[in-house]
Image (cartoon, rainbow, N blue to C red; front, side):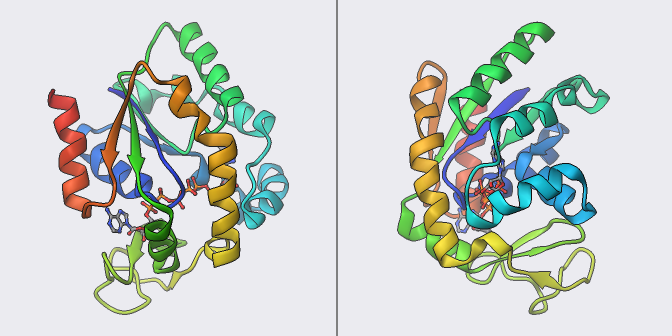
Length: 212
Ligand code: AP5
């Protein structure tokens, strides 16, 4: 199964991706996670990406596209994959189309998780994540058992650098200008899901799409 999850920052793409990927044994390919890992390891990509990420702007298409080339032919993608945060511009979507065409494969589902801005700002300001294992929490909706400590690996939880309110507002602006046009680009295939519901209800809506 080959899936794209679309939607504004903080709509729950990463949360749903984890659940779906476990369910269907497919890799969760998140460009945001790949970029953060590059920043953490101090690679050239990480060095170039950091200033864009910290200010809430998109990393240039050429960096993202070259980073993604070859990813779909890796062994773990043989039963499919889930893309979270890619594509994010029309140029990236066209590059993805070309890559899939070359590989003679196509996308099965393109799902858009819809959440209004006020819910997003509320959610993101309460988000904590583990910089070691990547597990994501929320002080309102998905609390860690012990405050500021990851349930999975016991290390300290942090707020992401780009989760400060001013940066989140910029990320939402950037989403509207550069990413939302993808909804029209994929209009023949896209399915909308109401992301205001709680986490398990959103999962149920997505799984229902797969069964319909
Ligand atoms: P990226 O990491 O992709 O960030 P994003 O798309 O802005 O999405 P988030 O990770 O913030 O949110 P999410 O939708 O995954 O929500 P989550 O599940 O965590 O990108 C970061 C940056 O990298 C970009 O700004 C850009 O600079 C760069 N970048 C990445 N990809 C790029 C690309 N392709 N091109 C160019 N640049 C790129 O949920 C959020 C919170 O809400 C959590 O606390 C969660 O627990 C909670 N939550 C989730 N679901 C619910 C629910 N239903 N109800 C209540 N709370 C919920």
